[in-house]
Amino acid sequence: VATGLTYCGVVGHVARCEYTVIGRKVNMAARLMCNYPNIISCDQETYYNSHLNSRCFQILPDKILKGMNNVGVIWQYGDYLDNTQIKTSQMIEQNKIVDDDIRNRNYPLLGRRIELMIVATHIMSLEEPLNRRRDLAAIIFEG
Image (tube, rainbow, N blue to C red; front, side):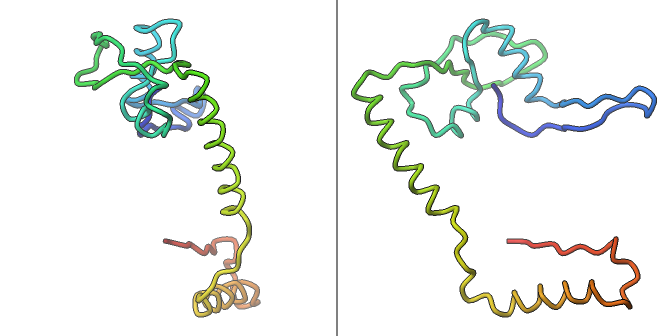
């Protein structure tokens, strides 16, 4: 497993195009799979962004990955937790589920009256008969 920027989309001529994912991190994931068979291996960025307990991972020995330089530390994911840690991890996960449930509820936007009026005005302008190019209209939110 490797984490990073890739291109995902259609590549090639219209007559022979295919949907694919390409990029350095895709190559790295393929190299990890070939060089560390039958285990779940990942790069440093995946290890960091997983937010899992560090005891779930072990550092793997360095290997040369074809066509790649400076790949960083390679980690192996596995079930290295003892029963006490598993129970603690389960309690933490249950608390996260409750927190996520609270965050995902639809709470009203407070203190955004001006912004809501601007959006409402633009939406109403899309419905006016003078707006001939409604199919090209878009509202983009930033922040």
